[in-house]
Length: 184
Image 1 (tube, rainbow, N blue to C red):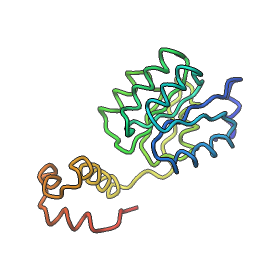
Image 2: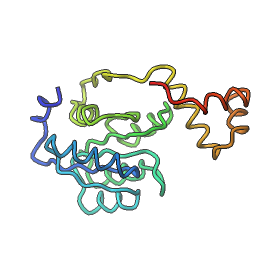
Image 3: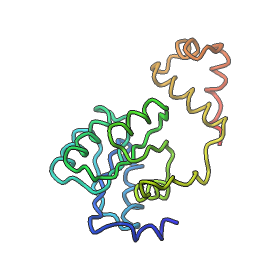
């Protein structure tokens, strides 16, 4: 499906990738270059804003949470400098509120991590009236639960007691869940 859609890439194939996970950023950059994009990478909000201001791309993939701020700040700059830019917001912290905020600011689509290059390409090249296809391998309910617990645990600075309180869960139960490997 992605191969057919590569014809949809216009003359301007510029793509900004914004993420603070260096390994993920490098892998995604290689994959997107193979798909015909001219990739520029940024590892911080400041670098993303600089690229968006100096050379606004036709496409962008922005992580929501970065060490130095929020990826939506870069989306706002992209909308100012290049209103036709197609933007996909990526995040490991999928929530309806952030998805709504991303779309209101001007993101074309919103994907939860882990998203692969094919999912991202399909989202970037989708027509406005097309609905993107459902993911090939969606997360299981156990995985979604585990991801939510991990997110709350990180937000509580890895404090088990505080995390258990916020999740309305017994502390020992939470400790057992945290000791196990992540479900598939």
